[in-house]
Amino acid sequence: MNNSKIEIIDPRTVWIGADAAQVDLVMYGDYESEACAKAQDIIDQLLKQHRNTIRFQYRHFPLTRIHQYAHKAAEAAVAAVQEGRFWEMHHLLFAHRKRLGSISLKEYASEAGVKDKNFIPKLVDSVYGWTVRADLLEGVDKGVRDVPAIFINDVLFEGKINGASLTRAIQELLPAKQSKRA
Image (cartoon, rainbow, N blue to C red; front, side):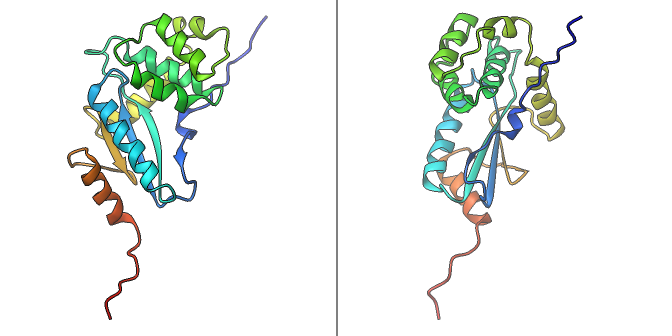
């Protein structure tokens, strides 16, 4: 009798940026969302500008009522986590957000460096479905109703999501630099 259990690496353990960062950014998003793709572009710029002071994590919040492929795309991203290829897959999914069918997901996984020969069967069997759902439920518990939803040090960012407003919010959390005033 085969009682093997699949151990799933939780995507919530995956961050990009400095480990000792003073500011944590967490975005709940949907891979089919244009607004989430734009928010990701802004966050990518912030990560470059604030390399040592911020770190970022993505959480799945697929809006399945309006985006029929978003949940499977999120599952594909979780599959990539299992091989340490999350960020590669994450960026490919946003780059190709208008083409997220199963065959396309397999192509992106291969391009991202995912080697799992059972990638499609695992998507079909929703092996990672509960992992995506856990992010979704956590988001709902935190008050997320729409995406993108960005949390800065665990506080929901209420402003307009653009480079200037996010930079301001981040800078408010950083220790004040020494003033040159006497």
